[in-house]
Amino acid sequence: MRNQIAAANWKMNLTITQAEELLNTLLQQPKQLSDHQKVVFAVPFPYLPLAKSKVDGHTNYFVAAQNCSNKKSGAYTGETSAEMLQSLGVEYVVLGHSERREYFSESHAMLAEKVNIALDYSLTPIFCCGEPLNIREAGTQNSYVEVQLKESLFHLSAEQIQKIVIAYEPIWAIGTGKTATADQAQEMHAHLRKVLSDKYGKEVADTISILYGGSVKGSNAKDIFSKPDVDGGLVGGASLVAGDFVQIIDALK
Ligand code: PGA
Image (cartoon, rainbow, N blue to C red; front, side, top):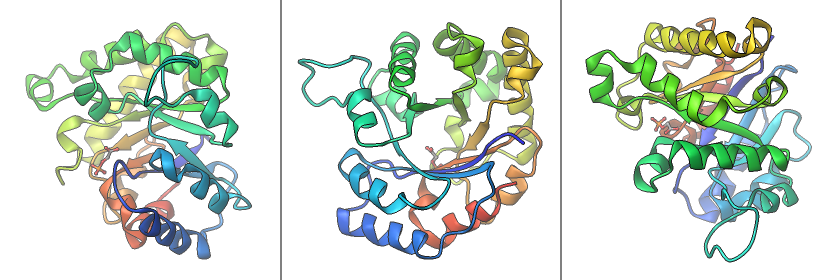
């Protein structure tokens, strides 16, 4: 079975004390995961060493950064390199979140560079894609999201693309409480898998985990994750509430 992943995206939330409390609560009696089930905490940069020390020893629990630089090293004040993340033992990095695309002008080309450098340092990119409301209303979401994949990922080899996790996050569903229906998620995920299959072949496409993100909660996770092409979720708001996130982990196939 493909990897099924519950990824917490804390965004720019919590103090160090709150972060530690949340991790302690979640990891005190962690759910035992099957080989194909994984939990990832995408925490703010300053909390990465803490989160890493907390997940260590817990099988299939991992830590992610929420971004990394597209540059290797050097005079880029305020940036964090993939090499630094690797040196901390970080395993995943969220790339191309819609908030970064929108507020920090991350382009397709820049994201392609970030994907490359993340892979160079053995980080697994969680590559985000998703359409804004006006595109959904126009009914052109499939081609919009397809372009995001093609422009930032399709230079990769078949071997490399299998190291990517994709997160489909319709922007109109992020932080709005307005979740895509399970059927809408499945429809897009199946489309993306078809796009991957046309480029890399079915066998390769079938190995790639595609997460859904956008107002996933404890109460709707099971329904959404039950769809055949939905391999878990990237979760913002509900990942800050221990009880909710535990339910989300429980909902993994
Ligand atoms: P949300 O955020 O769960 O709060 O909608 C999801 C995300 O942006 O990754």
